[in-house]
Image (cartoon, rainbow, N blue to C red; front, side, top):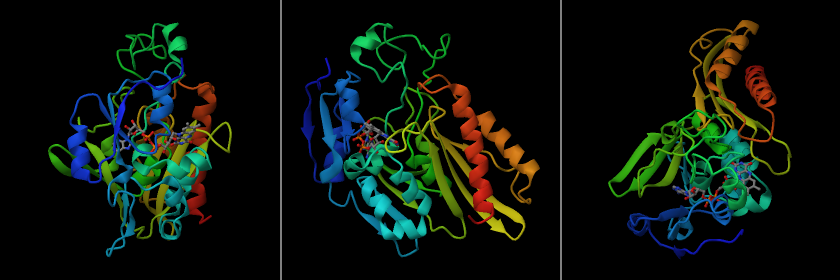
Amino acid sequence: MNILPDFRTLRPATLDEAVKAMAAEGTMALGGGTDLLPNLRRGLGTPQTLVDLTAIAGFAELTVQADGSLRLGAGVTLEDLAEDKAVRAGWPALAQAAEYVAGPTHRASATLGGNLCQDTRCVFYNQSEWWRSGNNFCLKYQGDKCHVVVKSDRCYATYHGDVAPALMVLGAVAEIVGPKGRRSVPLAEMFREVGDKHLTLESGEVLAAVTVPPADGWRAAYFKVRVRDAIDFPLAGVAVALKRDGDTLSGLRVAITGTNSAPLMIPTEAVVGKVWSEENAEALVQAVRKVSNVLKTTVMGVKYRRRVLLAVARRLVDDLWTGK
Ligand SMILES: Cc1cc2nc3c(=O)[nH]c(=O)nc-3n(C[C@H](O)[C@H](O)[C@H](O)COP(=O)(O)OP(=O)(O)OC[C@H]3O[C@@H](n4cnc5c(N)ncnc54)[C@H](O)[C@@H]3O)c2cc1C
């Protein structure tokens, strides 16, 4: 039956209160609920308490700081992120990634924190309890077998968030608050490539904010391929940030999503410091191919997803190099 399980909701007014509330067992953070609540309705989780973070003072603040960096409270909605003039002017790839998420009604309540911390997805997981029970469930939840990589002892559910790769290539830092205090890590370190434990947040920790440095000559873009342009998760998504110095590619950062259990950075050392040539484009494509691990976790064919991933990576760098 698709009904929500019983839970209580707390609505703390400060981050300290939220951290205290998160300490209890069986507690989950709640942002806009656009990822969590559909999952709970499908029987994917039975939390006793949801801690709604959206009433925390300052949690939804979006500020361009004195040093030119952008500070985003984890409660900033994706609609605000996509539409904010300063973000669109200074960090257009970030606004673009936010605008690509789901549909307009989702973005009006979906938060940055919820987007980054969203659950991983799989055709064997995002199903009703009835459907999953027919397969004896799966390694990610309630079962002991991965149906995607049958002999594996790890879960391969895929991370499909759009905003993380854009923030990663922009050099974003995550500010995490929990029972042991406050810590900051490069955003990429908030993820690990394990489908049923893809966040490195410790028990009781929440993402409080993200800081993005000034663009400082980097140009960036994000693009995703999806079944329905109006509303859909990325089948494959790529973010690129590039610095060009005359005929030299002086900096290149590439991150991918929709392919692995975490958003991942691609090693680019082999092509940086050179001219962007056919040979280097092929070297980048091979690097993306090596890191990506497209598996049968969505209904769309693996070969197609891999091909568009490689093509989009190449095209974004081509476009940014020529200044498109
Ligand atoms: C039809 C549909 C289409 C979608 N399409 C896309 C898409 O194209 N791209 C995409 O990226 N997403 C998509 N989503 C997923 C989801 O809507 C978005 O990712 C959204 O941004 C989630 O934000 P939220 O605030 O609603 O998260 P919530 O549902 O509130 O939370 C999601 C998860 O993050 C945790 N969480 C929330 N806030 C915090 C925090 N501050 N610290 C720690 N943990 C936290 C929650 O406990 C939960 O596990 C789609 C969803 C639907 C239903």
